[in-house]
Length: 173
Image (cartoon, rainbow, N blue to C red):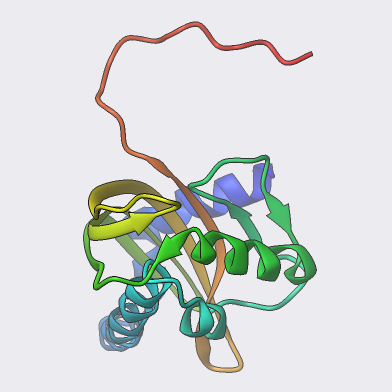
């Protein structure tokens, strides 16, 4: 875990880019930004109840992880994560929901990349809700190139709430 944190910290710094020639860094960045456009299409389908393209863009290896926006402790490995994506997408109902992502940060370093942003969902239908609503998720995602193709390796999302003072933390038994 400590190594992963150090890697993310180092890759977020300009030192990461110093290792790549400027032309290579630009090409890598463009490749990832093109992928992000496809990824956002997959996300829009996901919030309309169809996880197919999302799962296509996700690593199916044993180290894939999710800390999903519908709670729980998280899953690891494709055998657990794949069904989690099916379940999470089934919580949404088709109905023309759209997505806009406001990225706070996009970092690419070689075959690894991460994004931090707010995913703003419009006209989404969740669960048994009859009316469509707006949702906003704070999301951090880690991507890796596998066989030359960008894949989601980790996602952590939670519902955005108002900024406030710390509340007591419930104790687990």
